[in-house]
Length: 303
Image 1 (spheres, one colour):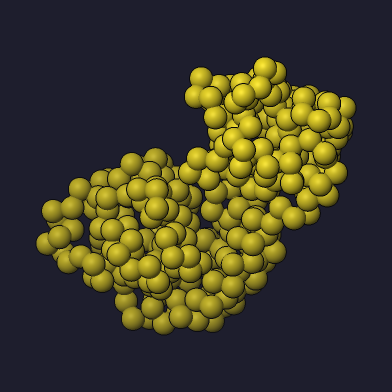
Image 2 (image 1 turned 30 degrees about the vertical axis):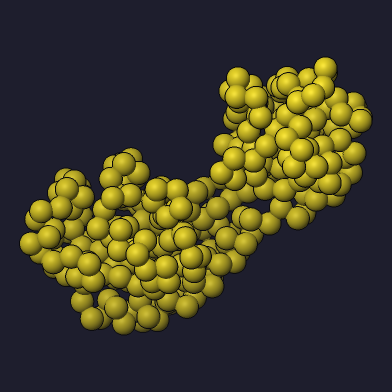
């Protein structure tokens, strides 16, 4: 029976390497393998105050609480102090007396979640990307059998996550669209996260020509214009007809120039991340630079 469960889990893991949308099946089959109540895919950004993003099976409500409580929780603090941690169980960082004193464990007890086992999926020095399985108090601590089963799937899980992460980060296939524009052009996510730029786009960022990078996000240099730029980036994925996108515009002042910069944002493609879910890549173009808005590609198909 255990061999069958292991086979199903490995099959799901292999599928998820090629299709990030298949990771919920990785969660469900490994939960069966470990006899766990549920599981959680999570990313902790240790350089951004332990900002926590998660996708929890069975009890999705817990994700809201985790975003608030996890940054100061015992497992996240433990992982932040160990840049290359590989695996954890509760008793690596806390004992039963500590659990009884912990606000984090008390909150999780509302969902009948107590004990955990976690595996780091991607080795990035200041970011912990992990899958965590959990059990109720009645199940007791993680057992040696569960740790041995984790070892059997550890390497396939890490390989699948690495491939999925690279696929989600690969914007090179959109490079021909960027380089085909002589106007400053960038690729970003709806929250402003910078992905790539063409030559004029990089030059605009360096010169702070209306826009700049701040903490990895594209923002307007003029603070009063930041809301307008953020709005067109956030609104781009909500275009009513993605097959014939209608660019939204923001007008931003430019240092030392009489004419402001006009930026247009439009949805370019969707990407699927195994933890974060689906994001839309947004094309941001300065339409009144050396060229005009006619340089914008029309009718970009979204896969």
